Length: 186
Image (cartoon, rainbow, N blue to C red; front, side):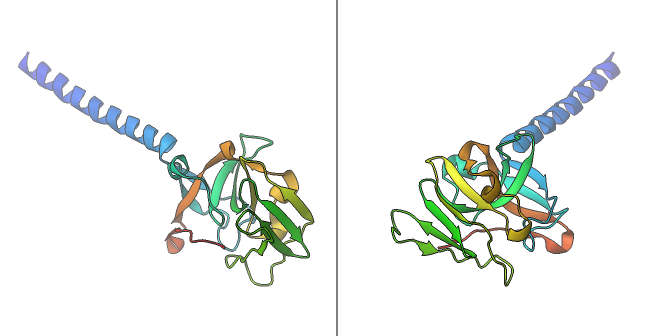
């Protein structure tokens, strides 16, 4: 009888450890960090196909997304599809894409400013002819590989509710491990 009690005690201890591990992984995966595998060339040269990223889902619960940050989001026209793009314009701003340049107008810059995008590849031109004012919960996003990116220039604004989180860490390939800390773009 003593052997059976010992066995059951050990068994329940293992079950408890497994349950705690499953609940912890579930919580982290659904509310803190989420993995994302890049597919496509729209963010090259900064992110490439098969880059394995960790997406921070907590930051945007405490503050709004900022210009220049790379985000993973649910595509507005099909929420089962996830995209990765860079935030270019913020809620309430006016964005003008013309003659290969991006200009942003806002309360702090009523005459606008040319967006300085040091993260883009050399000699890259932003094609498009856009002059739009974003709504109060909308973002304008573009891929870093502007010639091969299906983004806000094609399908419109990104609603804030569709944003999953900010890209914080590249884990794979191993030679490209990198943490991302976004500084001010302008």
